[in-house]
Image (tube, rainbow, N blue to C red; front, top):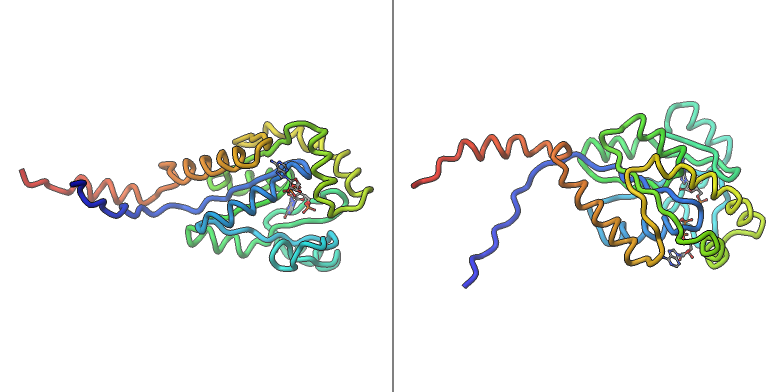
Length: 220
Ligand code: ADP
Ligand code: 5GP
């Protein structure tokens, strides 16, 4: 008979700030959504944006849709951890939910562009793990933008034109994933998250665990 499995030893760790970026249409939101649905330990940082809402989006879930005036108020009162202008609209990460999550050791996912990734890496380098998602080909990127069918033709053209400049930032990320087959790409993201959660410097509870371990005197 197999011995009964003991429950895992709980070891406290710091929260992870998982940043995912890509040129528009490469599939980062699809990967992010799948991760959020399958992994109850991670929550989404809901950005504010001045971009118009897409038909499939819900205010407060996908973004907080706000006016330019409100955006400027938040930015000028230091309520945003990072912000950037992307494809002609403003986007930003509300500071308070991130600081609360980090204080409680919860993981957070950020679907933000390279400018935002850079700002978070500068401010919170120990907590940030960054992934850049690439399309398999530029032709496929174009067809995904059309297949998504949520943006007008001129918005799609603008996003495609910007994609080369965005891809140029791939070296600034910890990991690079080519999203050809979605399942394979998602698998890679899960592996990264699993390994990063196990890093010694993130698991501050290891110190107490080892101290107790060495105090233990086995009965011979
Ligand atoms: P992004 O968030 O990077 O702008 P999305 O996640 O919205 O991109 O994906 C753009 C479109 O491509 C969506 O219609 C999505 O369903 C599709 N898509 C994402 N990943 C793949 C994939 N591996 N193969 C085929 N289509 C994909
Ligand atoms: P979309 O309009 O397709 O939702 O997003 C456009 C781009 O803005 C994407 O690259 C997305 O990752 C980025 N983005 C979304 N929210 C934020 C944010 O809060 N900060 C920054 N810097 N970029 C963001």
